[in-house]
Length: 493
Image (tube, rainbow, N blue to C red; front, top):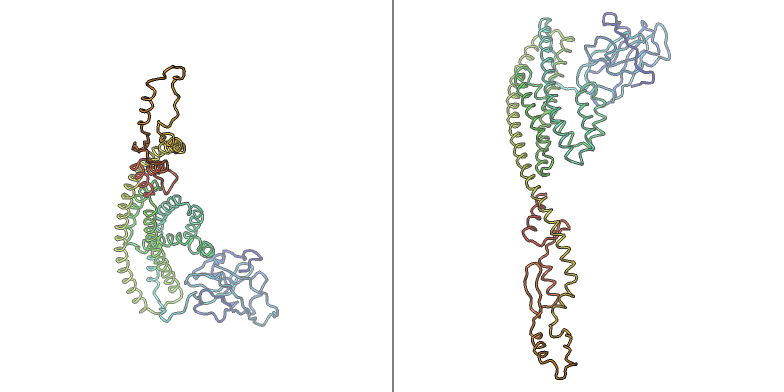
C-alpha cells in the first residue's frame, strides 16, 4: 500500500450519489488465490477527468461509504489524456495488504472528493472450486434470513463474551503457573500481547500475522495453549440457540474453576512431574478451544456469503431449498457439538478432582519439608560435632601412640632412695605393677575398646567408618538413622 501521501480522501456520500459507469474494471477474476499479488485493470471513460489524488480501493461487499475500504492504492495519473478517448490503466496490489478471508470484495475507483466513479463485480480471495452454489431468494425470504442472521450474530456475541470470560480465567491460571517456572517469566508480556491480538480478529489479522511469526520460535508451547482456548471459544459460539443454556452453566463452572485456580496458585512447590501433567491438560483444553474458534469463523463466513448472494443473485428458487436442507443438517451437527460440549464439562469436573489431589500432595510435601528442616537443624549440630571429632582425630595419632605405650616403658622418677642407706624396699613392687597395666584405646562413637596390638591406622579407620557423607551435599552424619532420613529428603526433591 502506498502511504506516502497519507490516508486517501473519503466522504460520507452514500451509494445514490455515486457514478459507477465512469470507470470500467476489466478482467476481474471470480476468485484470486491468497498469498499472491493481484493486478487490477480498469478503463477511464471520457466522462471522468482523472486527478492526482484519485485512488482505487478494495471494499467488502455491502459497504455504505468510502471510509469502509480495506486497502487502497493511489491511481496513476495517465500520461496521454485526451478528452474524447478512453485510457487503459492498471494497479498492482501487494499480497501482504490483501484480505485473508474468503468474503466477497470489489474494486472501487474513488476521486479526490471521495466519490465513487466505478465499481467492479464481486470476487473472493480463495482457490476456485467446482461446487459453488448460486442462491436466489425472494425479498420476504431475504428479510427473514437477515433477521435470523441478526439473531445469530447477537447470540454469537453473547457466546463470545462468555468464552472470553473463560479465556481470561484460563489465562490467569497460565500466568500463575508461569510465575512458578523461571524459564516462562520472560514470556508473560508476549503471551498477553498474543491474547490481545486474538481478540482483534479480522481488522488486526495483518498485525497478528507479523507478531505471531516473530513469536513463533519462542512461544511454541504458549501458542498451543492459545489455539486450544480458541478451539473452546469456537465450539461454544457454534452452539447458537441450543448452546445458550449450556453457556450459562459454563459461566458457573468458570467461576468455580477460577476459585480452583486460585488454590492451585498456592501449590508452586509441587513436584515438576505433576506440574507438567497439568500443563499438558491445559494444552488439550486450549486445542479444543481453537477448534471452536475455527468453527465459529466458518459459520460467520458462511453467513456473510449468504448476505452477499442475497444482494447479487435473485433468480434461482430451487437452490434455496437445498440451502434450507443444509441448514437442517447443520442443526443436527450443532446437536452433536452440544453433546461433545457436555463431555468437555465432565472433563472439567475431572480437573477439579486432579486439583484436590494436588492439594493433598502439597500438604504432604509441606509436612515432609518441615521434617526436612528439623533434620537439617539436627544435621547442623551433627556437623559441628563431626568437626570437633575430626579435630580430635587429627590429634588421635599422638593420643593413641601415647596411650599404646606401656606404662612400664614410661620413665618414672625413682624414689629418693639414693639418700637412703639401704634403699626403698617397695620400689621394685611398684615397678612390677606398672608393667602389668594395659594401654586403653576406645572408640568415641561406638565406645568399642581395642587391644594393644591394634595400630593407630586401624583405630582411625574404625572411627572414620562411623562418619557418613551425603553424596548430594557437603553434610556428614554420625547417626545412620539421621543419614537415612536426610537421603529420603533428597529423593523427594
